[in-house]
Amino acid sequence: MAATASQASLLLQKQLKDLAKNPVDGFSAGLVDDSSVFEWQVTIIGPPDTLYDGGYFNAIMTFPQNYPNSPPTVRFTSEMWHPNVYPDGRVCISILHPPGEDPNGYELASERWTPVHTVESIVLSIISMLSSPNDESPANIEAAKDWRENRDDFKKKVRRIVRKSQEML
Image (tube, rainbow, N blue to C red):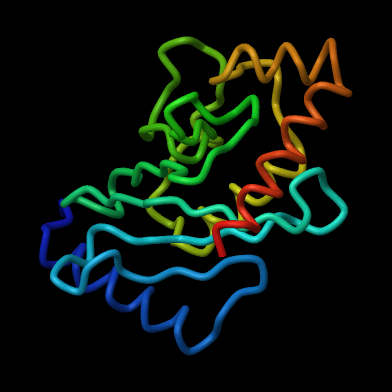
């Protein structure tokens, strides 16, 4: 049975209520606007002992009407320098790719979106991505190049965006 917009809405309301009742370390999430449960504001705290430690990074998570059958999109609104984040802020990780076989043959179907994912599992995957960049299949080629070939420059750019995120508080 295909998910309908009302089923998606009920599921998202439940996930929002669960996160409010049982907050998860490392991020906070809520609706951008109370009139729509399909767009969430997420603040990710830079994971400890990583280059992003101490940063506060905002993102918008936009859910499709047929959630959870299709993945949301996640876009950082805070500046981000990372191999798996496009220059426009869109996050590129396997679990946010549509379900099924990868047309490029890079990812296994089991690594892509499945309806068991929740807001919590998505954000925890993004936090993991911050801790362990994947430069094999970069969304930001320049950041991946810095990560591989000029780690000092990469670190300097990340320190700058961490400081900038702290100033925005």
